[in-house]
Length: 92
Image 1 (tube, one colour):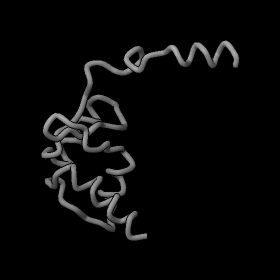
Image 2 (cartoon, one colour; image 1 turned 135 degrees about the horizontal axis):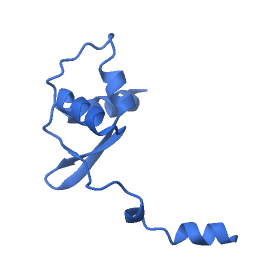
Image 3 (cartoon, one colour; image 1 turned 90 degrees about the horizontal axis):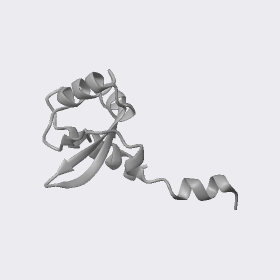
Image 4 (spheres, helix red, strand yellow; image 1 turned 180 degrees about the vertical axis):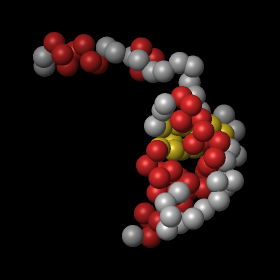
């Protein structure tokens, strides 16, 4: 084991995680999330429901969801973005 391996094992996630933690509620709309990600220049957000993380939404999730072929409304709940993607993958 190298010195680099040992030092990486000692690093805590809290040492480099962004603060304050930015997250979204499962009830927030796609439009809300796009605005929040753009404003804060972030690409991933945890989705929280009843104080538990229920998923993570990424820029890629949003791009696929908002693609011209899908034509969803921006007022849909963000939880549908990740739920639909998982459902689609399960069918394949």
